[in-house]
Image (spheres, rainbow, N blue to C red):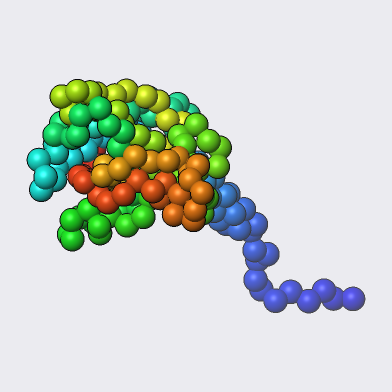
Length: 197
């Protein structure tokens, strides 16, 4: 029996193997670059300058050394009533186009009730009260483990609002307590921004 020969040489498998290896190398390098992540640099310091039409002024600094550490909050506020407690919260937005009212509600991404800074069930933005001295100044420093300068709980770009009254920390006997702490109107506010140092 004569064997039939079509005159073509059998195809080499080398180009196919080379193509598959090239594709695998490209996929591996791409995955390595994505896994490494070119994420934004860690924000370690933010600042807010508070102002009001009523003469209240102040500066609050937020510092966080890593994503896993609490935020240190340090501030000085002036022009307040002497010997008083004032509600102090992070609000949802950094929009102050209509004064403090356009800052929105307390920053509350989990839909929790209002509470004290030490409560597990609280708004992320619930920072409690600041206490003034006999000169109407508040100097304070505390750590908070719920707010962050990075990630989904970042407060950067949001606002701080100082209220006209004392925050009852959600312990009042009404619905407003569970929403705002009955802290009253908005006395001063400012947008939390990145610090240059």
